[in-house]
Image 1 (tube, rainbow, N blue to C red):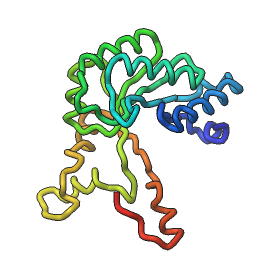
Image 2 (cartoon, rainbow, N blue to C red):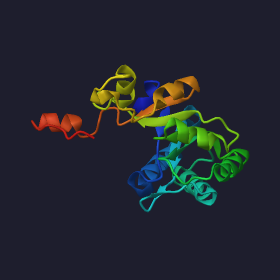
Image 3 (tube, rainbow, N blue to C red):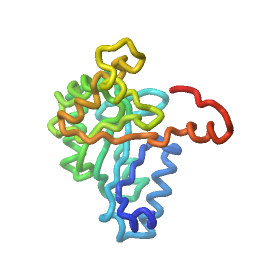
Length: 200
């Protein structure tokens, strides 16, 4: 963490399911030992996955944030992302939870992870806050969001609209695109062992 901050890297991304919460606990222990560093950081976490399901219920979101803050030993997080889409979400219920979290000072910005443009539009219809980011899988080994833009109106495999124009949508709406797995976990390891990686 010290090395990252020394190099000007101050964005730290978490999720309540990483290590079953242990990742946040370790980070929180670091912050407790280095109390002057919190204000130099932009801390983000994600919630909404539990027991193998996606849950955007208001009570669960609020409870999740309370757990995140406790593990990180902070009073607020700079950004909360809803981790994977809940296809049965009720936007107004999410909106009520966001209002409570914002007014209490627990969360400053809200975003999503792995949502397509229509899911973002649906969610945005029920919340006042502008969703600022969409965290999406993207790397040199996972280029689907770019491929569909290059191969428009072709029969090439890359022309399949799996992302539904989500990359372009985020740019139009001024949403940050955060990449996850930018080094494509498992890809470099496979080559180092002389194996061909399995496509995702």
